View 1 (tube, rainbow, N blue to C red):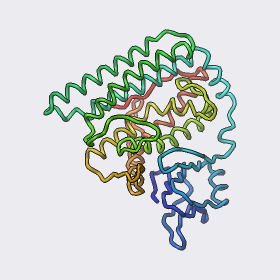
View 2 (cartoon, rainbow, N blue to C red):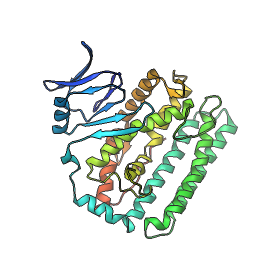
View 3 (cartoon, rainbow, N blue to C red):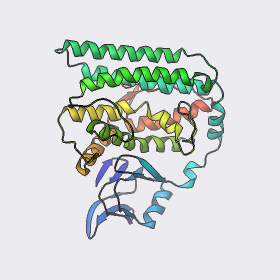
View 4 (cartoon, one colour):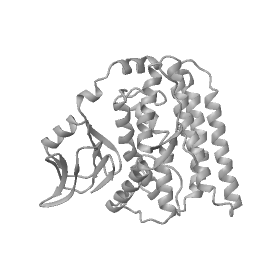
Length: 339
């Protein structure tokens, strides 16, 4: 069990009890107190272990103070969230969000989400290879991959269409071409023997297990930001609608996968930090270490519109910009991390 950041509490100890004492959250196991912190300033409690018990007093206190309680599986899959009903009771923004899907607002958002993803892919490759000039073949190959990814981002910006459905296929094609360049380059940069490249669900190798767990951890932050911005997490633009699929969360998270999770995971692996899989799953110690490092990354400050903000704050600000965009108040621009 650990405190994951200024605004988050991560509970990873099986069988723990999470309750409320006065105005504080207490995590205990039997008679031992594992952690205690004030409710004030807490934004989210993440339960990432089996057999954890929550008190009704804690649930009520979290609801009254706008603190979400999220649940994460051992593999990193987000499967539930508790929030106060009033936090998701917005109307105007959601109505405009649904209408935006059928006009130029939706087209602009879809292109911005995709371009942001590709821009951050290219910049992360440049960041990872910048100190490897002593390996000229690798250096030039990775720089070329970053250039090609930027070319696909440019083509996305030029796609014709006045509705999302008219450009989605072309957009996904460009994303797929860029992904091949990105993951081929990443495979050369990440010093893990026998890593064959990106796999999503069901992956049992070390690198993909780390990425999937990290993305699941990040998902909760993005989902919370979307909801607090008054948006419907299930009404996306790039990702197609399916029952139970949080399409907008999956759209917005694309901007942050590389600067938050990929950078953290690749750096940990290249520094030889102890990350292990047993029987196709990350060990408990590996999950704790990875969650701690991703949480630290979310606390890091990055330039954002002339100021510096923590990454977790930038996620929330970007969600608010999506909301402002669908309401017609300001254009949405994707956030590209510097390298």
